[in-house]
Image (cartoon, rainbow, N blue to C red; front, side, top):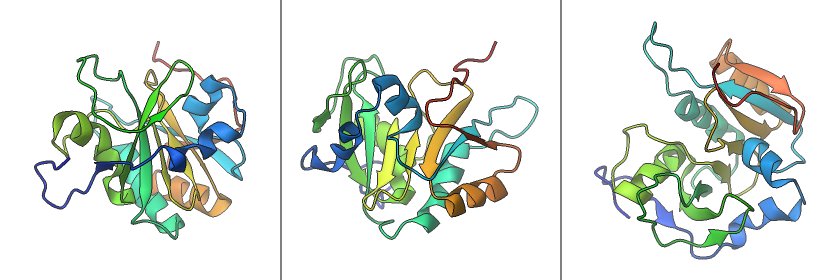
Length: 189
C-alpha cells in the first residue's frame, strides 16, 4: 500500500497476533477503544487542537513524535483502524481484531508513519491529516494511543510516567492525567 510519499511503508499486518494483547486484558470494549488496554503506569488525555483562532496543530502527530522517544521499537509499530471509519464501503484487506462494536483492521508501520495509516490504507495518500489511527502502539507495547472514532475533544495515551511528562512538556495545556475508564466527554457542546 504505497502512498504518494515513497518513504511511507504502511502495510496490512501479516496476522492479527500483534493486536491480540489488546483483547487479553478483558477490558470493556468502550474503555478499550477510548483508553487502550489497561495496565499502563499512567493514562493521559491529549486535546485535539483545531481552534479557528490559531494555526491548527496536529496533536496526534506531535504526540506520536514524542512517544517515538519512549519505545525501543520505533521502527516496528501497529495501528488498528475501525473498518467502517470512512463509510465509503471500500475496506482494505487486513487482519481483523474482533473488538465488539468496533471491528478493527491491523496495519504495521514505523511510529513516525502511524498517523497516516488510515489515509494510506483506505485512500493511498499520506500527510493530509484525516482520521488518526484508532489504536496505535509500538511492538514493545511501551505505550498505546487511543482515538475513539467518535471523539471530538481528546484522545488517550497509556504510557510510562516519563512518557506522560514528555507529552505534557511538548504539548503544554493540552495534556491532563486521568484514571483508566474515567468518564470523559466525547463531543463539544
